[in-house]
Every structure is written in C-alpha cells, then in structure tokens.
Length: 203
Image (cartoon, rainbow, N blue to C red; front, side):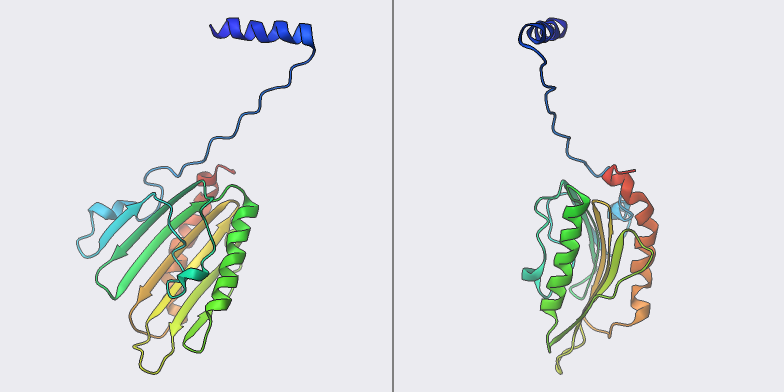
C-alpha cells in the first residue's frame, strides 16, 4: 500500500512538475522517566512526603508573589518534584523544556522582572547572577522583613541551558537568608546541568 502511494506521488510529480516535500512538525520533547535527581525519593523517604508531577506547573519560585511569575504554558514538557515535611518546609526540583532557547530566555527575563516587582518594604528579593553555570543562572531569595515576622524565607537556584530551565527551591518558615543556605541548591543544580542538553535533545 505504501509503495503504491509513493508511486502515485512520483507519477504526479512527472505530470505536474516538482512536488514540494511535505512538512512534518517535530514531535514534542519528553523528559525521560527517572531523569530528575529526586524522583526516586518518592518511595524511599520516611521523613518527607515526596510528590512527582508531570502536569504543567508554575515556576517553583516567587511563592509570595505568584501573580508575578512568567508563564510557562507553552512548555513542551515539565516535571516537578516536591518534598514537604510540615507546613514550615518545602523543597522543589523542577525541569521545564521550552520550545526554543529564545522562549526559555523570555521566561528568565520574566523571572527577573517578577522578582523586581515583588521586592517591597515587606519582602526583600535578590537575584544575583551565577557565573559559569549553564547559559545563564542566578540565585533567588525572598526574605520576609516585617517586624512581626519569624523571618520566613524562600531561596532558589535557577539555570537555563538552551531550551531547558532548571529550578531548585527551598522554603522555610523562619531564618535569615545567608550565603550558606544556597549550598545544597547549588550542588544539586551543578550535578544536573550537564544532563540538561540530553533532556532538551540539543546535544
């Protein structure tokens, strides 16, 4: 049947002239199962509750200003792993594959804009860049600085490598953000970044 169809196309080409090659849309990229560092924790950890989701999720950042998060609804694939032990703690690992490096860059720019808008007299937000990590990367911190606050804080590392966006974030109910708080986040990001082009199929 296939041979007959191809023969028909060839005859039509001879009769009517050159036939344009059909355009085939590239299939969406998918993150392999078990790809993220903490996916296996779901069944092993007895201290934290781990959840793995392939559903479209907002960026695991800017929890205090969710309306300032850039949209990632056009992502080709996403996966988010979250851990929570109680209401005072959350850890998240997230990978988002955008349609192109340019689209991923727009998300990063949107994050910077959202962080700047979220920075107020009640919430101190900082986004210093990280050198030599992916194509672009930065740390993120949001510290509650109201007088009656326990000092609740969110800190994260976000990395872009080509079309891939990687986020590691942590939320605690109290404690001032210090440089040492980024040790685990940075270690996790640095371990995963070399594999990002594999997920985005750009290597």
